[in-house]
Picture (spheres, rainbow, N blue to C red):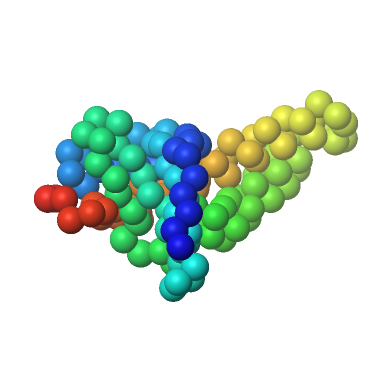
Length: 126
């Protein structure tokens, strides 16, 4: 039995294999099936309305956030905490946290743009 969710947008890099349109805010949805057990993320191109999925499912946005985003956040937080003048007061913690979040998300988007390859779903021409 196949279950799907509605399309939603989040920060994720996407390049359509059909028309070549790329964006950082592509609509995506999750499809699950019980026989065989499978979870698949599908992306929708807003230009040509083609549905695509990641070619390899090992390196997905969640894995990238754990392997790259969290270490980048911690490294930036510690680095800014060390470089900011004075003791770490509330303002310094806020600046370091926001800086760490921006660097982590930017690093994940950069890695996605270099490694993600998408394929069409449903036998469309590429």
